[in-house]
Amino acid sequence: MTLAFVSAAVARLGASDAAVMLRYEQGFLRIVIISAALVTCMYYCDLYDSSILRNQREIMTRLIQVLGVACILLAILYYLYPSLELERGILVIGLSLGAVMLFFWRRLFLMVNALPQFAERTLIFGDSAIAELLASELRTRPELGIRVVGQLKGLEKSNGGQAAISLDEEVEALLSSVTPYKPDRVIVAFSERRGKLPVEALLQLKSVGVQIQDGANLYEEITGKVHIETLRASCLLFSSEFRVSRPLLVYKRAASLVLSSIGLILTFPLMVLAAVAIRLDSAGPVIFRQKRVGHGGELFTVYKFRTMFDRADDGDNHRPAEVSDVRFTRVGRWLRRTRIDELPQLINILRGDMQFVGPRPFVINQEQECVEKIPFYRQRWVVKPGATGWAQVNRGYNVTIDDNKEKLAYDLFYLKNISVGLDLLILLQTLKILLLGRGSR
Image 1 (cartoon, rainbow, N blue to C red):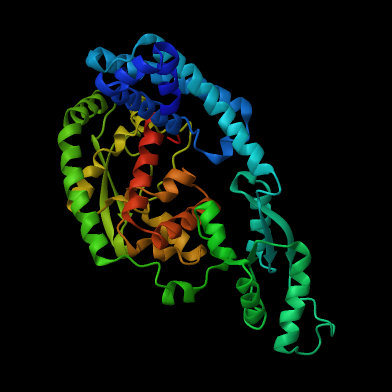
Image 2 (image 1 turned 120 degrees about the vertical axis):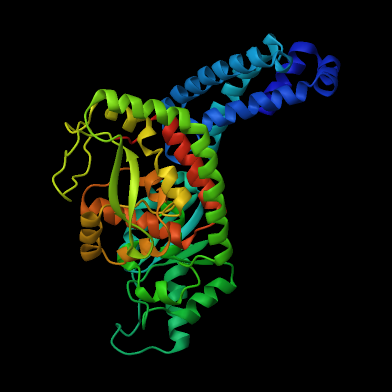
């Protein structure tokens, strides 16, 4: 985008005058600000989502949205800071040129990426369920630059597979099976590796430049979740992953204290208005209190603004909210849509019951049902729950056991890869969801 506006300045002013404007009149700073605004709008319009790349009509629609929103933001910025305004002719030419360049650049990327000679030839080696999922996922996502050229379920043994074969025969069998595919990468995805994995043969392939990759790891990289069906207890027990370092815990607690304090101060006027609106709209308490399962399976009380009629649920039987739930009050429906009902959870974060980022806490009966029916579900409790999390930004609302099983797959991915960078990504994704009003009930 910066190149488009520099080109627009040269086209509008000429090379010499454009150089003066860029160097001595804050021209480059103005262009960087416009480019940053456009890139931010593109992010919030999902133009960096790889699934959007394949739909040309969708790209055009979202590009128009980006230009419209960016013009509004720039108009506000120029009203507040007139010195940052870019000359009108340069702005129009730059926006037009940038939109055209962006559209054709993405088309060029797809065209080049779809060419067989540029895609990485990949052979799937194994018979597990994850092998089938990978084959299907990779074939439907050409933007990844990985082309599946075949799948081998096992070695073809010259003796019919009845007798054990020597090490040299195993190497020869694998090479003769793999060579016709000419792979750049071999994905190993066996349901049971013991006695099936030809280690020496795979090392022979690796020595000649073929990349050998574990199927489960590749599945996590392209989907952002763990494949629970192939996850073993030994991975959780002996792996260096699935653990949180003490410095990271200290950082998360310190960040939670600082950010929740600032958040409470900044949102206090808004919370007062919300409390008054709830009180005027329906009878009942302003703050809704509910027991949730937290760190280590211990219970804590979560605070939210009440969005349903008082005593809408009997006892501890809390039904998940539906899209058009008759239990919502008029104000409550608006509070849930804008997520303002979640603001009192800043108190939970300040107290240390929760963090900003972590697995979302649920009520006791839902958690107990999931523990009984979903393997490894207790692993969600090894860290403090969060107001938002990797499962929330990727999966959204969960109701059924299958939904919660999918949610656990994302939560385990978070626990396996927990880091400051991942937390920041989740917060950015959460801000995007809040601004666009997605997924609320």
